[in-house]
Image (cartoon, rainbow, N blue to C red; front, side, top):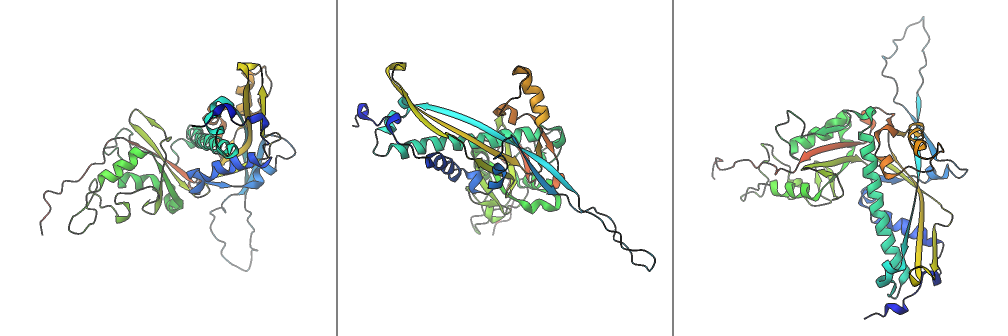
Length: 363
């Protein structure tokens, strides 16, 4: 059994400068939203803030105006049109966290305490990354500019099928109309995945799925697992997705739906020791500054500061909180809804109804 009384002290450890980058990078490598391509690294976002500030401007081109072509004749010149541009804004987030050595005692007794700490801290930030993404989605979909946009609620009044059926799944992905094929990833709770697996009714003679809710399912959805696909949309499973009173929220994403950029931080990692507090405490502090920007949406800094300053002595607030990210007042849609690369899909926890196959003719 390891003798934790001789464990390496945090304050005595030489934490290399790259350790902060190592933990941040490891948190990204383990995050399935990054790995699935939902979140894409955009390094030049954070670099725009090297001179200071909290907002990044992201210019974009709008689609060409849908005007009729000009009919040639000898009397008129060709009239030139222009392409319009727009600007969305992304917000810099700042987060710090600290840990005491007592929480890490068992890990620090190992042979490689730096690796043990790196794994623990990166796991923490990976979980925070997911919470930031989901809070941002809450804010986006509670924005008045996204009302009834890019969302399909199978639990709404008048819906007779409230489940994650193939029909409802198609209703969700066709919220983007002819851009439905842009949606490459669907994130679901494990309870939803279980429903999909339980719903498969397989003909023992052919091995083919017969039907669900009267719809024949493609073979690629048969007993789906993470990494499999529904209609070519890859499944990601995450139990941090919202669940409330038997209502489950799933999301469909295009690749690169969110842009992410990590900003270098002075003193990103710090260690120390207080000999008097609790008879000696070692501590570790980690600081991060980063941007996570949903495509087609813009952060409303003036609305955020107007609210935040009320409880801060009328002084500007440096960084939004998790709750601020989820506040629809601070998000505005700046692109056509078909160019917003994600869809919210709400279903219940009811089992997907199995079709009655007892009356099928027997071979």
